[in-house]
Amino acid sequence: MVELKLGSLFDGIGVFPLAASRYGIKPTWASEVEKAPISITKWHFPNMLHLGDITKIDGGKIPPVHVITFGSPCQNLSNIGKREGLAGSQSGLFYQAIRIIEEMRCATNGTYPVITVWENVMGAFSSNNRLDFKAVLESFTNTEIPIPASGVWANAGMVRGNDVDVCWRLLDAQYWGKPTLAQRRRRIFLVADFRGNRSGEILFKARDLQSFPPSCGKSRLPSTSASRISSQKTRRKIPVVRPFQERRMRSTAKDKNRTGFIGSFGRTNDPFPTLLAGAVNIFSFWYEGMEKEGFIRQLTPLECERLMGLPENWTALGNKGEAISDYARYKALGNAIALPCAEYIMGGIAEVL
Image 1 (cartoon, rainbow, N blue to C red):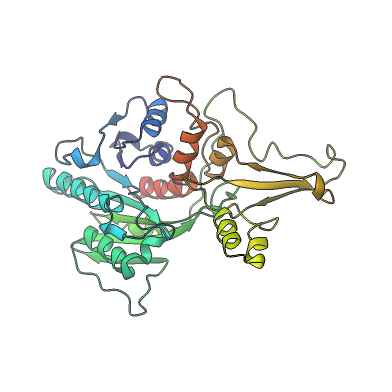
Image 2 (tube, helix red, strand yellow):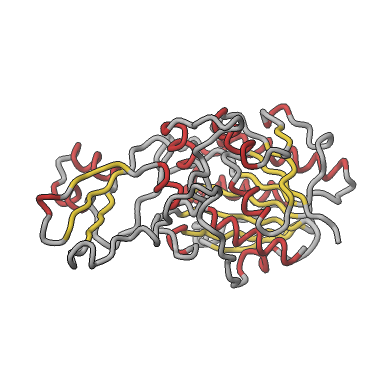
């Protein structure tokens, strides 16, 4: 049986390699430039080759792999930023990944990679008057792709060109995982199959996710579900947790929009807002009927890991066992991919290959 191998561009903290390894796909190499994420990934995958700056990689000279994943920088595509789109200096690095894929396919006579996975923010659908997503599809298929007659890209779809089968789907982290994650995190996942018509099977077929322990070490902390306070210990008091929508809170306060400001406090069953690399994630907590005794606090890095579906303390240690700062952990987690979404896709790839 052939051992499937994976390469991860814009690797971050190794979420795609973790998901791949859980389905028997071997993480072979990664490309990343941020120090803390590289150190975290090396701690978990000591045998994985690190290639460094993506602009200095020759796809024809690195070990060929069956699967290449990349969540290229989203700063210029996000609805939060200036929205320069793929013309921006950071999001434009997307084309470096496409170059590496083409170089590898050229060097291996079209054998590798077999599958490519691209992940990015929902804003990629609309940036640059919706022309950026058109450019993404055309980069994978090397074929002209028309913008839909509606003028809007659907949240799921498929195209085919020059024997490349491409499907995309918007996945929201709050509906994934066991138990499902409590974070609203909508991301585009695109799968390109260079050897068949299997991208739809990978991205649209219903399949169960495997169950894994929440910790990556023996000294694990209680999981989210295991650490819930029982009604007996609280004398039947019901805990109330309400996450803040911080960006909405700031903007409505600036505009003196009272209704919007109150709405930014969220409701009890609301999911947490999307974790961001450069924002403080806070929530309020009290026991029902005891609001005046409640308090506001920031999510801990551990809680952020749980919201991403990651093993507990995944970001706590670096390559030499050194502690990673909370600041670096928050930033890395805000830039990361929700693990259950990556696992769903890797499970599909392992199944079809």
